[in-house]
Length: 390
View 1 (cartoon, rainbow, N blue to C red):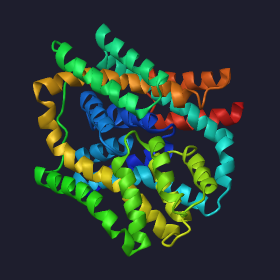
View 2: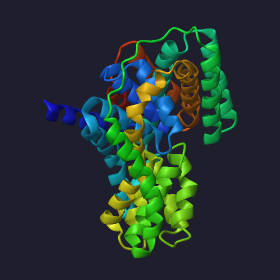
View 3: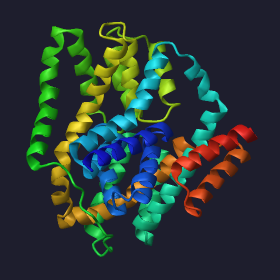
View 4: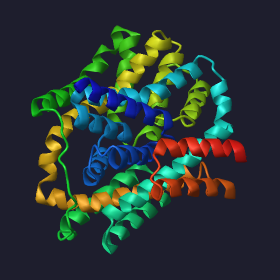
């Protein structure tokens, strides 16, 4: 029975890893469709709370949400398998691209890639619509969502996102006291003891690894990518300047090769953090190839895994504090606004160029919202129609 649960977690995450285009916010929409609407592994309110929490944590937010849901569903092995399923497909593609598979680069402009991006518009729009109905049921919270979206679109920065969440979280704590509480199922997590060990490892490695750099290139690679994963807020796009400053001045990779890989990472499904596997594979210093890819991939995601295991055991206790619980009303409405902003940029702006594009996206939304199709069916339908029509 437990083995079947592990397999279910892995293959669900694998399907998401193969179909989730559009960047971190779009991934959260795909997760919402799969884990909340279809699988019902986690409640609407618990999911929104989890998304808000992961926006404040360092590391790739969408991957952390997936890890947390895997932890809730099947314990620590489930958290690990959720990460493997969601991350490995994009990492493998990028490693092969690094080995010279230039076909992948030419595919960035292919019709089927365009069809996949259009399907992301349908899925994200459906998620925003569904979450707005549940989390913004009154004028005040609908206003919070719109203002959050406007601010993020006008000032495109992760610091603005954190600021918006913080401001409306405070607003909720003091001015949304009478809001109705949605049904909430507490998230399952690991023990408090494991939480303490995980947080100790998180900070311990951050302090210890720099002193091990002189030993070998393996430690230098691991330290650079671990530190990047531990200190970045805002997900994959924010990791670009941090990684550039780590690997290019050191001579591990040329700027042209770096940017070529980053461009490919934006054209495939899955987390942008998987770009670390590409850098490890093409590094001019040994270990490189598959060994370097695995080292860099693990090092960049390990901080996210440790902090999820470290924080979640205390999350339910924290969110039950009256002021924290009230703040979640404002935070959740603000999360809807962030998703709404992401629906426009980068999801809409990278996919909708013609009336045909819009018609396909609208059809996908109809099939999701009215006919209750599953998200993978929308992806397949949109790709096939894009090949036929364009």
